[in-house]
Length: 214
Image 1 (cartoon, rainbow, N blue to C red):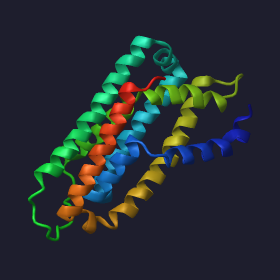
Image 2 (tube, rainbow, N blue to C red):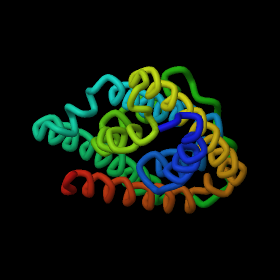
Image 3 (spheres, helix red, strand yellow):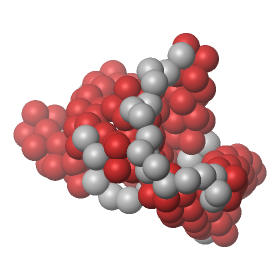
Image 4 (cartoon, rainbow, N blue to C red):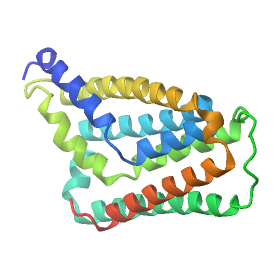
């Protein structure tokens, strides 16, 4: 397959995949709504670094091992489900804890300190690395665009870089749009509902990862 000729199809596929609901979308929407664009940036960067790591793993053959090994896939599936369940339960606890907070205007969120920035970055990175579907996705998706007679690892790395560049731009644009309504989202009543909905989505995704087959 000609790499340049397949790029339009690759870009279209990446855009459609990025817009599909999932853990990444749920985390970004929550962070942007409650912490603004600055609060969503480290989460987006962590998610995209994790995705790029899976692209490199796919180019190096590690994703094939995960997809082929029952034990490796099971371990990753359990870890991924646990991460999503913990995040979901944490959001539920926040909603429950704030249930008595008066519904008064809330000032804009303060800029993240270094420790919270890295915590948000690590959260995004962990969610992506612990996602077993990412390994299977890379194994099924990237070979369609990698020329059979070309350098597999280098081509996969370049395609991965293109994907994370596109996704980063799309996700930051989405976060900026959501952040514009940040004052409304930060109202205690709305925040509680957002935390409850986000927690439910993350728990449901965690359960789906835990029980789903390949």
